[in-house]
Length: 348
Image (cartoon, rainbow, N blue to C red; front, side, top):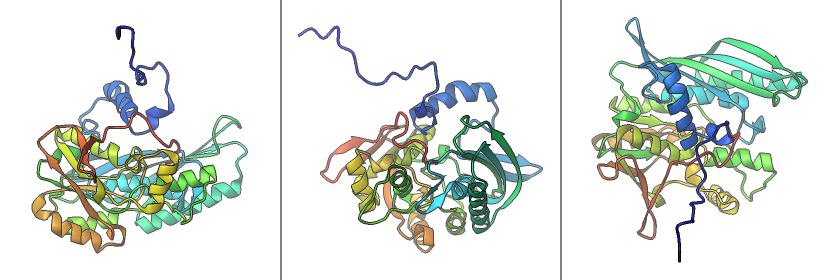
């Protein structure tokens, strides 16, 4: 048989226009940052490409982050765009070990949206900020013509203070590190999808949307030598682990059966042809911890309400640097690759 005319059906990544996958936290997002934004902006602070930038201003170490939220629907089981706008940015700050302090808030509103809806979102945002112990210190509002938006978009930026002696960033992952997840994965993505598509499950699924600053503070009280923290939002656990492995040039080996996937999430993903490892979370974190500190950190996490189901799911290795693999329950090994785009768009 002549194979000379055969072509690979894999999707082409060379594109002249933006597609939804460029916002999905996967390979297309990474390429957009690497080839468009990073060269245009430059700067040392941007080079680590962490969830938040670590800055030094007059001797103080600050974390600075920004995020935009375009979730559809605006309200979903367990939260709303207002909750996401606070918790998403607060958690990005916490992943550098910072104590979140202040937020800015920008509303982009479409002409014709109900004022009562905007008020509900603002109230949810304010309540979430008080729960996270941060203050909304400044903001902005813009309105676009009817038909030129999608109701309500929200942007938040935040600053926090990084304690002395804390150095948490993706490049610090090292062979021998233990990988811990703070609890069950996939809840946020499935909760949003269920409301969007009108799906009903035997057991209701609610988003895990929550502020993780208190959990991180308890972990740092055990040891300040946490190597990496990351909240696996867009692209899920798989994308977050691949980004860390690539940044530190280490391999990651997961024990697939150890990853806590709720039964209702597994059932929904099976029905929809999704992999829970790629589904977004909004109230979970991944921690890369030195093996000597892992037991104490795990105990501290389990003592906190947001870490009660924390579990060790893998380790860092010297083999296959930049690659994440999972050991399956059947004794095999599979590659857990970086997603190209996003399984579920508009979930944060």
